[in-house]
Length: 495
Ligand SMILES: [Zn+2]
Image 1 (tube, rainbow, N blue to C red):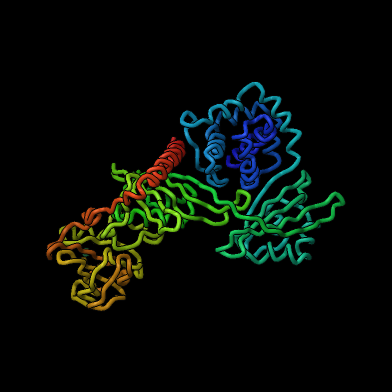
Image 2 (cartoon, helix red, strand yellow; image 1 turned 90 degrees about the horizontal axis):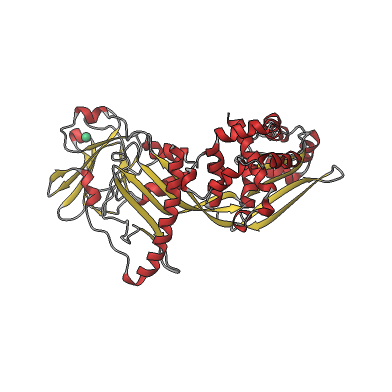
């Protein structure tokens, strides 16, 4: 089924492509993206493509059965934020919500026959891509790319430039164009020399008219592009992010941005939805580096939180709510950073929690060694072994408020030392009276235990300065529009 869908995607893209001259500039601007999509979609078999293109009836039927996949691609392109990967697999907005209806209907008009005829003449070239593996030989790489071409393999092996770019390295995206005999026509790979590079390197191997191969490597500037995605939480934010093909660094930024509002370990609910807009640096449409989270929105437990990155030239940027309050809070909502490693524990019923429901703190089940952080600035007033609490750290944040971190396997701080919000105080353990690895956490006001969930509401939010207000409002309005588009994509996913 995946193969068929891919073929259909290709067929659709080819139709659109063949019609490029007739498309308004809005679409033709995005032809590069289509091309990229064609090289990033999964390899498909020639047979499937043939089925799809020759039997227009079956194409029509398949299109009818999978309209969302087509919509997904086109919508992502229209919104200008789609990446090949997530556009193909994930972003399937409801056609009625987006200006993509027309294109989708195009496919179902009687003209389809004619367009399929054009397509038949135009699919002599096959596009595929894959990712290099450390163990690759020239043969194994080409085989994965669906090529049967020993001359190309020999060329790669014997040409230092090609060998260095493709072999003994993993994770490099390689795209090829092949003829119907599965022979290599061109092979392209792009990479960054260093993380701070603003240029990317590009190596292209080409088969000439004389059947001889040639290679060239050049550089070109990276382009910044804005992407959007959205997801619905079924088990954890990380699972939902994987589903939405969100880069891990963006998921981390998302959890971090809302760490003063939401305890992702305890308070994230099944069905929570999020939308994100972020920047990537791309080489001809291929994302090579993930940038900053630009705006985000998350609705959890019927409450909606949003964030937008705002930075004036020459000044330090920060995240604000769309109404202009700083997202930085005096207290973090959770004493453990939300990570892939800890994310799986949050939604499980915790046996210790059940037994000790009456106890005066919150238990966070997590693997031994998971870092434990101070939820606010303060001074360490205790860092020692303390009976049932095991290794315990107490931090006094102000005259009234303190926090307790217990059962630690390791304590990183000393009594009397001052500590900043987010600084590591120790690591999760199971010392003292504990039936399994977990952090016992308490929040005390004037020595009395308080539900730490109230932490998220401690301290007020700084509003943006009045000097920055009008600039900020513009930025926030823009963010609102983008988040709405991202939310529509997400809604399309679940329909
Ligand atoms: Zn406890």
